[in-house]
Each structure stands twice: as structure tokens, then as C-alpha cells.
Length: 312
Image (tube, rainbow, N blue to C red; front, side, top):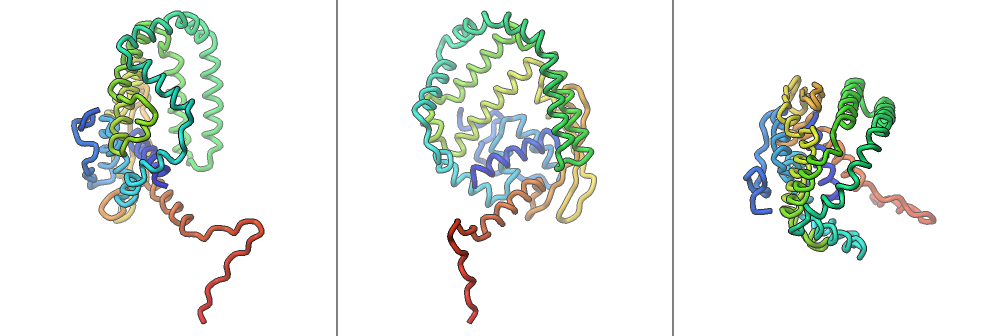
């Protein structure tokens, strides 16, 4: 359960933020330090954006989960990471890739492999990209309109984002040689900072170590995307949150932000648990999971359900 909700919490926190290899992380704060919960619903949104910009993944998860659930995630991390054994093929591939990315001459070798392919890729993308983007946007837009979990405002926002994303993909210079060289350097530098040689090493990481390394990887990804015109930091910096309604237990926050120079707004529902605010969807998901875990298991085929206990 903990691994599942660690992923769900991260997704929830990322959603709150974007819409609605030392002892310290990139922000200069300990990744294991307790997060000070913002006192207001809109403060939760702003804090999530700041933590995401800094690559502080642990803080994102802490802010998305109640303390008892966060404690379970940490306690069960190692066990659930190793629940399914890795194959010899997976281990060999991981070691091969990390060796390739962290070698002293990694940048030169990767560029030597990529350079001959760039012109061919450039010609193919010039011909195929407009059609691929149009088809992709059509499929995604259709799925958005058919999604019964989204209201009209959410559908409109999602559609605007897809349009902006498609325009970026079509205009980004993915085959530019200089940008490719810079991207290779960022990827190699990031792999060196992560500093994992084998899959066994990765699976042996503690929760705190894993969150720190995931944060390093995210910061590297941000830098690569920024080279091609997608500045996640610019989007995060543009976030403005305003509590439009609240009472003792619930709140609705209006979130305004800009992505690909497109201004968007969203509404996020939060609930108060104890003295902290959390995303309503995350809390609903936790509640459903607990109710499912508490319900008696259905009898297997051929078995009969146990008789209720007698009061007499």
C-alpha cells in the first residue's frame, strides 16, 4: 500500500504545484526534515510549487499525505521496492546504461553516436511532426471530452493545455546540434550526481536517499526541457493561488498560472485534517483504500462465506 500511495501522493502534489548526492538537497535543506505545513489552503499550493522547483520530492510527499500515511511510506519503502525481484537482464541493462552515462568520455561518445542521426531525424520530423501532433491532439482532446470525472471547466483547461503542449512540440528544435550537445552534458552530469552503478544499489536505497536522487533526476530533466523552450520553473514561478471559499473543513482554491505563454486557471478542492490542508482527491483515495482493506475478502469459488458470529 505504501508504495502505491507514495506514487499517488507525488502525483497529487505535482498536480497541486502545477495546476491546481550529499546530505542536503538542491534547495539546501535536509530532505528528511519535517515540513512546516502552510496555515492556509492557498499556502499549500504555493509551497508545493516551491518544493517542486527545488526538487524537494520528500517535501512534496509529506505535504500530500497525513503524518501516519507518510510514516508508512517511509517504513515500507525498502520492502516494497524489492517486492518483485529484478531479472539478470534488467540488472545488466541498468549497469550498462549507468556506465555509459558516467564514463569520463561519456559526452564525446554519446555525441559521436547521435550526430550522424540528427540530419535524418530532422528530415523525418519536418515531414511527420505536423501530422503526428495533429493526430495526438485529436486523440487526447477526444478522451478529455469523454472523461466523466472532469467538469466543463476542467475539460476546457485540459484542452487549452494540450493545445499549448502541441504547439511547443511542433516548434521545439529537438534536432538542433548545439542543443543536443548541451542536453547530453546535462544528462551525463545528472547521472554522475545520482551516482548509482547497479540496480541492486538503487533498490537498496533508503527512502530518504531515494527521494534525494529522484530530486536530482528531476532537476536534470527540468534543465533539458528548458533548453528546448519548456521552462517548468517559469510555470512554477507564475503560479498564483487564491482561496475563494473555505470553512472549518473544506476549501476551494483558484490557481492561475502560465504554461507555454498560455494563461490558465484551475480550481483545487482541499480538506482539513487535523491542522493541515490536503488535496481532496488524495484524501478520498486514502479513505476508499482503508474501507476496501477493512471489508472482508470475498470467498473463493467453491467456498462459503463464514457465518456471522452468534450473539447468544
